[in-house]
Structures are given as C-alpha cells and as structure tokens.
Amino acid sequence: MVSARDLLESVIKRMSVFKNKEVLYPEYVPERLPHREEQLRQLAEIFRVMVLSPGSASMRAMLVGGVGVGKTATARVFGRELRRLARERGIEIRYIHINCHRDRTLYEVVAEMVRQMGAPIPLRGLSPREMMLALMNYMEKNNIYALVTLDEFDYFVSVAGNDAVYFIVRLYDEYPDAKKRMSFIFIARDLSSLDYLDPATMSYILKHVIRFDAYKSHELFDILADRRDQAFYEGTVDDEVIQYIADVEGVDRGGEGNARAAIEALLLAGEAADYEHSHRVTIEHVRKAFSKVQHDIVRIADTLPYLQLHELLLLKAIIRVLRKKSEPYARIGEVEEEYRSLCPMYGEEPRKHTQVYEYVNNLKKMGVIEARVSGKGFRGRSTLISVIAPLDALEKQVDSLIEKRLSRTR
Image (cartoon, rainbow, N blue to C red; front, side, top):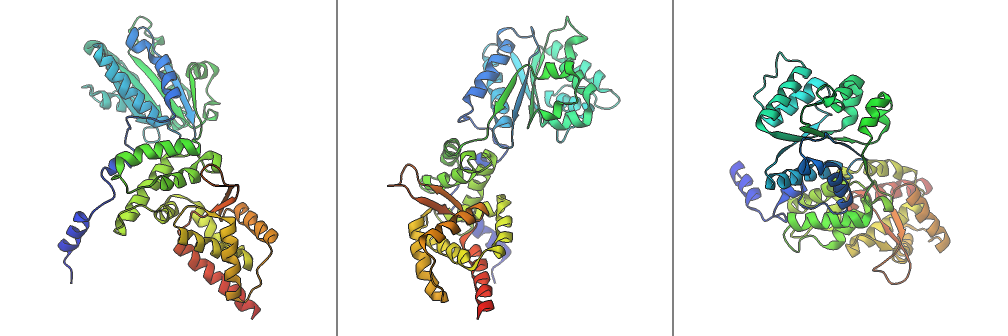
C-alpha cells in the first residue's frame, strides 16, 4: 500500500513538459502582443497627452470586441508600458484595472479605485462623490495621475445606469480648473449596451473607439507559438500541435477566434501529457483538452445517434486513420481506403466515392468532423478531415451505435 506522502512526492517530483506554466494562465500579462500592435498604436495616440502634457486633458477610449480577442490584455500591456515610459520622464502614472462584472455599482467602482491607488481614504460613511473628491485631492497632493480601465463596462452600464456613467465620463465638468489627473479606458463586447445612455454621455464615450476582430488561424498560431516557447521545455510541443489548436479556434476556419480558449486548450493539453507521464504533447492530448473547453464535444455526442450506419462506419474509419497517423488531419483518400477495408468486417458493401463524399459533407454540416481543402504544406489539393473529440471515447460510442444498427437488421 502506497502512503499518501509517497503518492504526493511521486507527483511533485515527476518530470513535466512545463517550464513556466504561469504564462498560460488568464491573468498573465505578456511582454508581447502579436497582432495587436495597431490597437496599441491607437491607444498611444489617444493617451500620449498624459506623458507630453500631463494634466491638460482627461482622455477616454472604448475597446470593443468579442470574448478572447485581446481587449483586456491590450489594456493591461498598454497601462504597464505607459507607466514605465512616464516614470522615465519623472511622471507618476498609476494603472488601475477594474472588472465591472464584480464591481458593478458606482460606489464599488470608486471604492476599488481608492483601494488600487492605495489612498488613505475611509471607504465607509462616504458617498461615491465624496470618495472621488477625496481621491482627486490625494492625487493632487501627491502629484499622481491615473489611467483607469473599466473592464466589462457593459455590466456597469446596465446596473449603475446613465447617471453613474455620466458621473465618470464628465468627472471634470464640475472642476474645470482642476488638473485632469484621471483618464479612462472602457472595455465592452459590443456597443449595443450603450443604447439607452443619453446622447451627451454616449458621445463622450464613443469619441475614440478601438475595435478588436476575432483572431484568424495564422494569428492564433503566432500567439500560441510565443506562449509555447515561454511555457514549455524545448521540443515538447511541435508546431503541428499549436497549428491544430489555431485551426480549430481560428475564425477563418469556422472557430470563434478566441485566443483565451486557444491558450487554455494548450495548457490543458500540457496537463494531459503530464498526467500520462508523456514527454511530448500530442494531438490526442489536444483533443482531450478540447473536450473540456469546447461545448461542441457534448453536441457531437448528442448528434451521433442520428447518423446512418455508413456515416458511423466512415466516422470509425476517420478515427482509425487519425490514430495511426498521430496527426491532426487525414486525407479523404486515406479515410476512404480505411472505410472500404472496414465494411466487409461488418458484412456491409462499401458505398461509392460520390456517396462517401456526401457522407463527409453531412458529417461536417452536423459538426461531427472538421473538413477543409488542403493548402500550404500539402502536395496537390485534397479534402483534409479531423475531429476535435478524444478518439478513444468517440470510437467507443461509435462502436456501440454500429452494433445497435446492425442488431436491428439481423
């Protein structure tokens, strides 16, 4: 019987594919932001006044885009670099980042600003206006400036309402002679949440809008390669592994273009490799990772019972080819050859090429497989087929359904 201590020590001491897992965590702020240089340049244009003429103006910018497109990371990187640049010039700029999903009311937002600023201001017994005035006095006394980001601003708008938003964006209207020591970045998924704000408030917010598009496959590859080089030991994660993740998530490949989900998949694939004591992260580890982060896996499992017998046989052929190759994609010719060898084992006559191609298209439409025309790196043009579900679990379900179909005809 192994003791609990021995068990724990064996896990702790075992070799890992990771050398610095933290760079794959959501809260990590990277040194580089591939494919967000243009958004950083736009932020620099808007907020350059904070360094060139501090206190002369309070600036605002709105960052807009879907989930996982780099809005939060861009704001944090920009805030960090702006602070460094300002300090080199003898200017003290604090970067404050507030998540409005957690702090949704005006009181909570202002109180969090006070906390992150480290100002000795009591948080009880004061109204938001009184706290803000005390904070402005503290900043004036200590010659401090602040760039404040209100992340998930949609929640603040919906919960706090127009008056609270007006208070934030028109902060210096009541104090026209005061130095403008605060500037703001607002982050939202779309602009529809601002529709019920009054025109004056909305015009202040939308003066500088910076848009973030969903990431394409080649962009996600660059992001994942950068994180891979920092997070994993050399030689443990091949390019084809991160290319597979990028292809599944890339918006141009039918994914959501979500870098956060892609990085999480890479993290979970690495953890799956460690759990299996593998020295390399494989495509199958990625499939296991996707089974945890993608809701599509559940949908695929629910779809399988509706497939015809020969669609199931073709899917089994795809699984077998992918397992043999240990690669992310299989050519349709390889799959068809495997399918033809499988059918006699089940007493079935293989269907013609045209019908097989129809099955492939149907499986693709139903979201069971990924299928695309080959591009760079492949000789000639061919349909490439893949699945994102773990192969072993998927094949067990397919085998069970094939047996059920055959039992009905016997």
